[in-house]
Length: 435
Image (cartoon, rainbow, N blue to C red):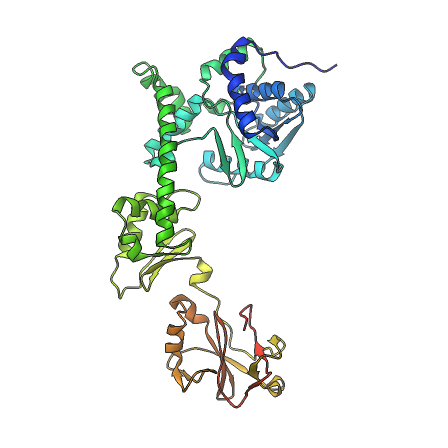
């Protein structure tokens, strides 16, 4: 016979249940919940509470990081608890990459949630008020701005996953009290006491220094985090207006950036540079000094993984490594099978029986392009077409002996005027560069 879960007392009803039901009614009334359950005190309490409130809408997930011998023991503990109380569950093993252990573990854990969660599920995390205060302080010590100091949000979306933290306003002392009152079992992770990790140091050393002097500091810090969330929302609205005026995800106009105040310019550049994390203030300054304000004759460029930032004709462009160093075609016999037939104007079909050659552009070439009057320097045609300097190495010249048949460019094939240029002819394609 299966056991029933604890019946939570009046403290639960008064202090926590109403808030959770309010969130659920407002945001999640049609969703189910995937509870991240480590087996620890916080997540076990959360699992029990949500299962009591929404018994048919909850399942648990334990992520086994495989970093400690006890990981298997804790996985078994969560499995046994869920089976005993008829809670659907999943145990998933992950590999944690090298580097910052805390950060890489979070990354591996979230990837596991992404692979598991269903479209109508909400990911529910057991972060509480002390977690929020610790996050705020640790980000403050790392030099975070408003975006970082907003810490964790009760309801958020990350990479299309809806996240809910119903205990974010609840002090840890209350969680400990409720766990004890309702005799909810849990496991203890000893790394939570290892002050080698910043969060454990903050919890066991920093708290003991600050709290006697400022007994309400935890509540005050979490209130400040809420104010930072409001401030960040307002700043984001301003930032989007500036972004619309200055460019797009691939480029920004330097003059439009200079029309902004220094603070708004830094904010926009910081947001535009962001990949997984916001860049440092020094990185933003280097982008301005080494690219925006470099000498006009300088080859201005700056690398912030994984992008290159370069200046060209009054704009800053963001390029991938592949865009900055495009593939160069080999000098080889042209493959006449890769063609498009029956064009309004193209190459004579008799050429399909001939050997055609591709040559790299070396500079100084002159060409009579079909539809234009006279012979032009190829360089001028390239400039008029606004082909970026970092793309020009992939320009190739298609020839029949000494006759230029056309130019293969990042914008497609430019047909040259010659005796081989005829109506209803064919045009070539090469490695995805179309006509």
